[in-house]
Image 1 (cartoon, helix red, strand yellow):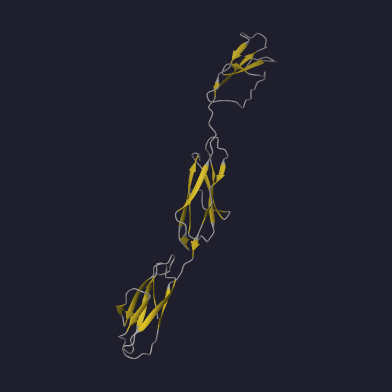
Image 2 (cartoon, rainbow, N blue to C red):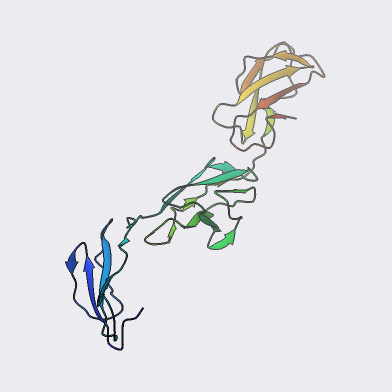
Length: 235
């Protein structure tokens, strides 16, 4: 105000005179708590005094921060159809970070720190892109690690029993053998003769006291991963 037609400007930063004689001063070398002000010398008529000193602008400099995001899965490997929750753990996300979840490059989920799915397939990749609103993020958006899913198919245990012979003479020893599919690493066997439990929990059962019309069968208890049922009954 009242600077006249050609006022002169002297800019100061922390008391040091800066180069330039214009109404604006630009710098990229500010540090926290730096003070910037200006002394104006007026060439207007009838000014007293001819110089005026401005207020001091004290700068607050926020440090540059690097946002990060790491994604973990509640379980992996899984069975087909299992529910999985993916969680994003972030740093330097600011007060209101934005989350964009992706599955195989396609946007999924909502703007939350978690994403859940029950329709995952083998080799699906899930990750998250974080957009930070923290002061001075660099860069503002970052992508997480990719979680590559291992999805095992659902399997159905089965068992069939064969005998060394089915037409015998009295007191002949017969061995029954169980053949299983999807029994797992430690299948359990329970043999039955005419509805009564027999045998020793092995995949074979031998008997020399068989009578005409005796029935022998076996129930398998599977410990396979992703089994549709735990037990199966043979012929």
